[in-house]
Length: 338
Image (cartoon, rainbow, N blue to C red):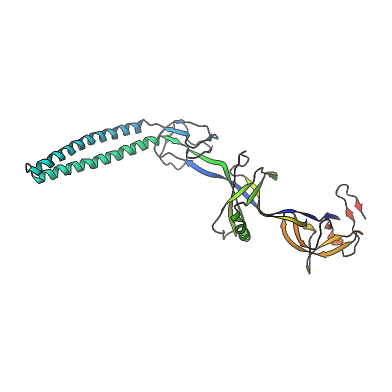
């Protein structure tokens, strides 16, 4: 049978789960106007910065529309200026009684109509200028581009169902995971400190070099699964985390210093509660009741019943009884010690 030594150590209080890496933000880039795509300014899979030019749609039709709108504005603006001059002239004449009031009112109405036309033309010019700006599509965020869905020469439709490209922000990045609702109280207890640390183990249980911090707790428990969703934010400076990856998550609620721990398989359950077999100095077994606490990984905290340095049986309990001789198998050679 095998034994383990009771240890005193600092033990993290952790919750384990399976998590999914998500981009910090995602933008599906679409065109707000229609036209021929004349140039793509990046390569798919390339990193882009906010404001970088991504696509150019043929601007010539929109430049022509802007010039036409500006010409109409200039024409009506000139007429409006002339109407304002007439209003000032007829205002003096009607005061002296040289023209009828009705004629003066007609001049004022004409000036007001032209002013409304000028305002409408100005709105058309602003809209035409905006449409022209839409010909030059820029990145709204800093991130990494995905698969390019529109190529030079394609006819682009306004607000098409399929995006031209999707950009994922991966610096920083989210890790999304869910934990059973029974932990909600503990999470709420430690959340105000703002330092709920999260570690993630990717692939072959390799721990990611940086720890994240919980930045989001959902506002409701999912009644279908009995879990609550959380998100941790990682800086991801070395870009080891990638959207879509899955990993094992360990969220640390707190740290318990100087606690007595034993391997969890050493603990047995009897009619009077949990107990362990302690190996005495004369290599006989002693059944000793214990009070257990938190279990983390493969270790369990012993709140009462054991001292650091004692030895407990971890395998072979079925052949033991109080006072029985203990045969210890060494881990290195497989030899036994009586």
